[in-house]
Length: 364
Image (cartoon, rainbow, N blue to C red; front, side, top):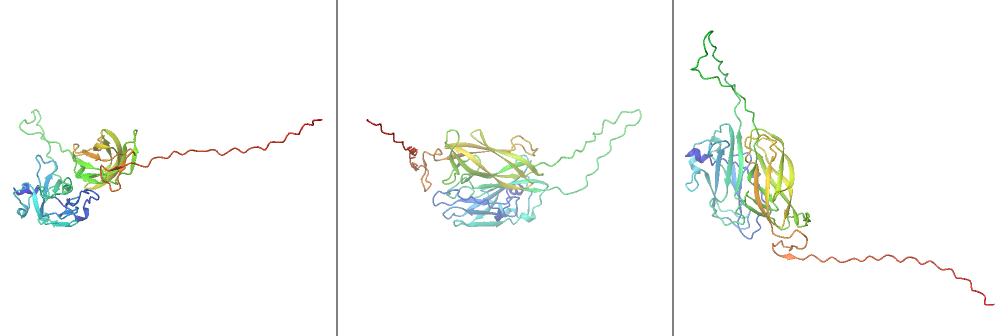
C-alpha cells in the first residue's frame, strides 16, 4: 500500500518556481488556491491563495507515477510514509493546508524525501490543491499542476555476453542451448509535453480541455482578419522535457478552429521547463485552440502521444471596432465609438491674372 501511496508523493515544489497567475480570476471576493511545485521535483511543495478572500483549511494531494510503468505507479517506498496517508485520497500523499489569507503562501517540506531511493527513470508528479473542491473559488480550473524528476542510471561496467558454443567437427550444434542474445545499446531520447496547468491565454490560466475567458484589457489589437472581427491576444504555454536527452530544436504550432495561427521554434534541455510566449488571433465568441508540439515528428521521443493539447477560449466582446468594452472591462457592457467626421477638402483659389486694358477707339 505504501508503494502505491508513494506513487502520489513526488511533487517537489520550490516556492521560488511558483507559476503565479496574474490577472486570472477577477471574479469578486472569493478565494483562489493554486499548487506550488518546482521542476525538477524537490522536497518542497506548497499552496498559495491568489483570491480576494480567505480560504478555509483544505488538503493538498500528490500523485507519483513512473514513465513507462503500465497502469501507473512505480514510485519507491520510504519509511514513515504513513504520515501522509488519508483514506479519503488513496494512492496519494495528503498534506493538511491551514486557512490562508488572500495572497498568503503555505510551504511544506516532505519529511520522507531524503529517505527515498529512486531507481533510474523519469517520474511525473500531479499536485492538486483543494482536493475534493471544498473551497468556493473564483477559478476552479487552476488547482492542479504537474512536474517531473529524472534519476539517471549509475555508471557501471556492463557484463560481457557469453561466447557462442562451438560445434564439434562432424556434429550438429547443440539444440538444447538457448541462442546468445545480441546486446543493443538504446540511445536516450527526449520527451516533450506541456504541464497540466500550462495554458495562459488573455489573462486566464486554466487546465487543458477546460474553458478560458479573455479578460478585459488583455487584447493588443482588434479589427484584424478578412472581416475585421478578430482580436490579437497575448498567450503562452508551459512546456517541459521529461525525457533523458536534450531536444535541441523543435516546432510548436498553435491552431484556432483548425487554422494555423502561429509557429514557434523551441529548444529544451533534459529536465528543463519554460514558458513559450506567442500571440493568438481569436474570433469573437468561442474558439477551439490546439497546441501541437513537434507536429511533424522531427524529434524522436520516448512518448509521441503526449504532444497535442486543447482548450476552449471565450472572447466575450466585439473585435471589429464597432463596439468596445466599457472602461471597467465589464463583459456585455458596450460603448459605441465616436462617429467619424467627414472632412471636406477645399482647393485654394487660383490666382487671377491682371487683365490689360484695351486702348479706346477714337470716335473721330
